[in-house]
Each structure stands twice: as structure tokens, then as C-alpha cells.
Length: 211
Length: 160
Image (cartoon, rainbow over all chains, first blue to last red; front, top):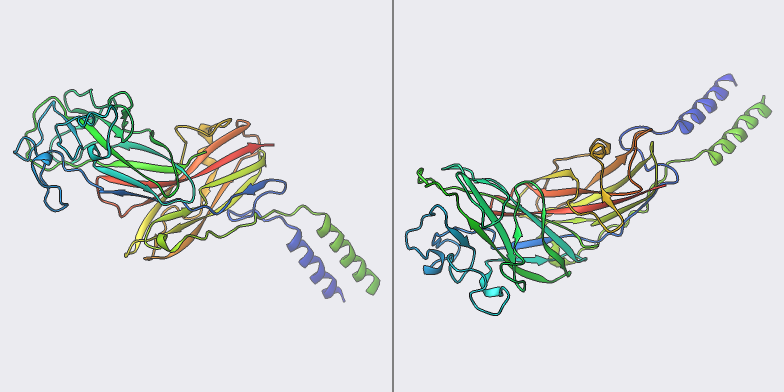
């Protein structure tokens, strides 16, 4: 009989001891609510070969290499403009940037509208070129600047600086199932390139539900 | 002796009924369309926590789908938003230590979907704004191109 009582007491103790491990449930009285909306975006294409007629991605022709030498020069502002890497994204003359002046396209596949924020890392490989976070008009020794531009917005007034570390809102309230064209303007460092080695950088774009 | 056992059981039942138990949110599973089978996606896009207080804990699973044709490693990281929702402010610096990500680097098989538990556990005595926001950011680390994407689940926390 004593064993029975001990077993009951032990069972009660085990049930009543609060769970305290890392996978415990939410605390009492705290409400946690979420609707199972899906978040998903794509970007196409995903690369820009600055002043380089890259035939692998179908980016061939004079527009992608307006200087005809497949190399990047110092103190030049380049645009990811399919009409020409040396042409500003208002060359068509509509007063705002057109789709045809943008290389990249975001598609929002989510069930909700999204904001997309971007930042740009330092270049790796070859010569030293780091992001000064000053935008596409600012460069100096070893420092480049970059901005994003979006179709349907005014150039250059609406250009968004691409910082090195913080996320800069580039696209505001892109509706679900919609897409939008955009591009990048980049001013190279002021000192010459010497390594003749390919340099690469990454633009990271973060999508979050628009509230 | 039988009466004693009955008494113990009765007291136990009363204690259980009156003892506050941890609560589990009702978790609705996402229903993505077939067009998302080949895409990377997460769900939910937003988690709202209410009546939060120092010493409390809130949790919700984050669902991640690997739409690639290959196994890929994902990173799951805490981030302070550069711009918080209306009436909210960015999470305080100390909040980083309050976030628990059960598996910050899941390796997901092609076309597979996994759940990773995210929890926020605020220590007793800690302070936070009345309404604050943090993000849980998911990145497919197999991306190698110039433009790479991330997906952020927004956590909106209202204090009691």
C-alpha cells in the first residue's frame, strides 16, 4: 500500500513540476499568434558583370561592354542598364526609370505584400575595393559607392544608397504575386586597378512582410 | 488506507486543475500553392506576441522549405530591423540574448520542409519598450551569385 501511495505522489510531483528546458511552451497568459502566410521572393538574373560582355548569361553585345575592353576602370559610374552600362537609368526620357533600363527583376511569390531591403558587401579578389556607404556618387582611394534604382521612380532623386552593413529599404510594398524591375549604379574607386583579377561583391536583399 | 489514497488523488486533481500550465499556440500549417514547390519559402511571415513580461517565454515554429534540387544549408539569424512597424520600436540591444533558435544552421534535403522552433525568453528584471520588434532572418547559404535573397519573419512583441 505504501508503494502505491509513493507512486501516486511521485506521479503528481512529475506532473506538477514546471517544464523549464529550452523547448518549453509559451508562458501562461502570454498570447502568441501567427497566420501561416508564406514568404518567398526571386531575383532574375542574379548577377551583373560590370562592363563585361558575358555571353554565358545572354548578356552580350556592346551595351554590356560600352568601352569594348571587358575591364573595369577607376572613377567611373557604371549602371546595370541593359541599354548600356554607361547610360543613366533615365535615358529613355520618360521622367522616371523604365523597365527597359533595369537589369534585375524581383518577383514576390508570397501570400502577402513585401518590403525589400538591400545592402552591398565589399569586393573580394583582385584589388581592394570596399563599400564606403556613400551612394553611387561617392568614391575615393579603395572606396566605391553604390545605389539601387527602381522602375517607375525618379532618377536620381529616388536612388537608394546601398550601405555596407545596414539594410536600406529599396522596394516598398510590393504586392503579392507582383514583380518589379530595378538596377544598380556603382562608382568605382579612384585609384587604378592593377591586379587584373576578377573581383566579386554580393548584394543581399531581405524581404519582409509589409505592415 | 483507501480513503487516504482517494484523498491524495483528489488533492492531485484539484492541484492540476488550478495549476497554471504553459500554453501552446494554435499552429496552423502553411498551405503553399504548387507553384512554390520549387522555391525557397518560409512561414509564417509575422508572429505577434501579446501580454509579454519579464520572466516570460513565447515560442513559435518557423517553417522553411528548400525548393532547390539539392540539399542546402540555411542560416537562421536574429536581426534588429532597420525600420520597425508603426507604433513599434526596434528591439533593445540586450534582446539578442533572449532569442533561442533551436537549429540556427539546418541542412534541408531537396524539396523538403522543416520546422525550427524560435523562442523569446525575457529574463526576470529585464526591461523592454512597450512594443518592440525583431526579425528572424532565413538565408539559403548555397547562393553564390552577386544578388542573394533572404526572408525575414517579423516578431512583434507587446508587453503586458
